[in-house]
Image (cartoon, rainbow, N blue to C red; front, side, top):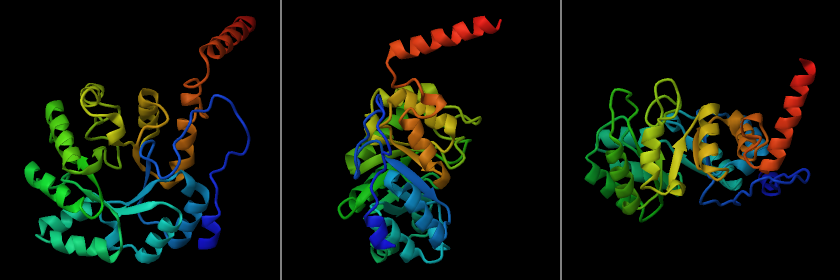
Length: 282
């Protein structure tokens, strides 16, 4: 299997004009993070075969790595496919809440993970202390830090979002993750799953979008971000079966983003033809 996946090439099965350019792996932008909530070894192999070429990082969601069987083998599979695996931020918080930060570092070393997440979505960590942890951990590995609470009752002002993101990037975060949860109804999203437009606009007025990875598990959220930022937006908490559909959204190969990259004259011509058909039917 390892020999097979190393031969896999990103498929472009035929030529098509007006397809947006996508960065090649390893990417700094246009990153897609898949959320693994307990795939089996066979499911992992199947996922890599079908969508490994589209996947940049894989998060073992929340604390699933604690109870996942064959964890070392899964990590090995992802790495061999050019995918960077890491443990979800909730596991970090579970160690930290018990005063076991150094033990957590030992776990990362044991599993040879060069990517790690520091978050405080379930517990409260003084922000200066969180930045010190980011700075310390980033000396030996790539760090992503998450901003935003998993509790819908905790509201963070736009100014505080910006201040926290800026500080964490300065402390050494590769990307700051904008909290959305796997459900997509907290953080940068309203309870009904729609984007918190005012908050997001305030954030991107001060923070470069390429430094942010937006958790966007729902299709309508992915469409919203792609229309705002284009194909190279960083998106995370994507379900395994949604990886190929998401890439089609990025490339304008689904109805939701179909006209994003076509020339205006093509769009206008097609709309004119559609209007003529409607008139004929009437």
